[in-house]
Image (cartoon, rainbow, N blue to C red; front, top):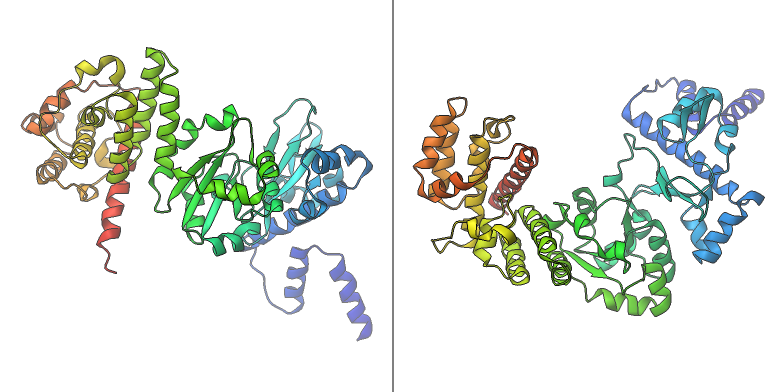
Length: 484
């Protein structure tokens, strides 16, 4: 009996975590599922844990001295922070040396090895390694930072995406920040790995960062479970200030979780600024954060006076593109009010031009004058139905009726527009002339529809925008109709 026990222990110690679990199941007569998603997820956790262990050990190697200096001298991180975030070094050959040939395909599947001439090679080499962890703390991927002056290649390199790693679904540092966010009911979102680590080390613990992407709806859903407010902190350098394109992300502008924004002083990043002013002053500054639409409008306001007519036209088009991505009527109304002031345009005129390709700044006299004293909500609804009519009759595919239904337009407050949409759907699959006759009979739409130019190049994006806006507004109506 004793010999059997020792042989069992000897076999167990030579196995990886996944192999050990399977081995124990076999000994107990319990069949283990093979190839299931749960098995693959567990395999991912184990492989990333093994790789993290290798990277962390490699950081103590002699050849990793430049990496240690970068972390402790350039980034001024304490040893406890390096340990807490699991930082390491991708020493060439370290991963391959420790992986048996039979397991290399597993490491390739999760982005640690890749095929190359002559066989497998490591995906990360000569980089500071940063584990990317789920909320639970399990590592599923890595970010690799090259050392300054290291030559070619991107400064930051993330693991390739796989079934358990989607960049737009993971926030770096959430595992460390979760309890602080729950306590304060607020999350700070910064731009990079080292911003998170520096702020966390300084005592600002409720801080996370997206993985080189814009803050997404999936990120906000995660944060909404533990926070009541999100503050996005932008660097004070030109790249950080030039945030308009990134803030065009449609989901940020339409979140049930309030999103505010704050820009650091010129030339500063969070790491530098918190060391300069201290954590208390840093958090006091966060109280000056403003709602995201106001922050974006402020960026436009700062630029419009510094550009010529062509630049102003381009800014106005960008502003309208952002406005089209705001399905919430109240938020849209506020954003358009700011835009009217910035660009010195009539607000109704600005609202009416949202679905036009021509620039309001240079062709404003071609936009039909708004005759009725419609509310901004009414203008928004009419623009949506106008765009629907425009896409319905242009003869191109996919047809709007393939992507939407009349029920999706339940948000329409105008009985006339709701009736028109219903009649429009009755023409689906028939001659476009029937739809055109309906449009021409409707005074609210006819004049503007005839002046809207056809543009096949922009059609895919316009159709996507329409489906997005209608779907979001429809969803809001359904949610508000649910009792309790």
